[in-house]
Length: 212
Image 1 (tube, rainbow, N blue to C red):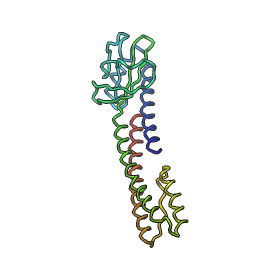
Image 2: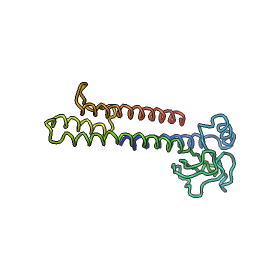
Image 3: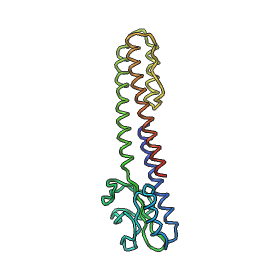
Image 4: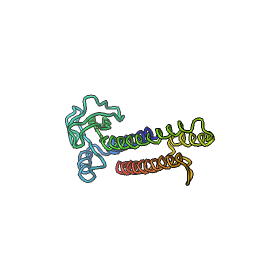
């Protein structure tokens, strides 16, 4: 659940950036728009990753998007498409709008940062499977033993962790038996996992800040 929420949040940030830039540029005076696009790309290359202004005939006027993708509808909606002729090759989130003078404005943002962070998040959550496996082993050891009440507490803590509460830790006694020692190992793994997720979240927020 946490992985998909983080991915959706990053994608939403990219989409908002694309639509904001599309609306911002489309509201500018048509006769000044080519100059403004050129100046913006030169002065703030990271604000608009890719932009193209085209005649109604789809001939390029200005911009680093050299052609309108054949499958891109002019519906002012963000779509995922490849833009192979750009410096940031690969998949992009792209939106296009027909302006009042008939020209076509296209704005795009690369998805590479989102793809990289998704990969890192997935690696972190795969690491999170290790505590789950260890918990299964612990549960098997405890079956039939008099520590049934403790098993219930462990199970409740495990469910809270799997639900996304990465601050939760398994109840382990400071000077316990081999089970407590195993739980301490699991808790250390959870500490490391929480650090990774916090680092990835910070990276996502930095990307979101850059996109604005």
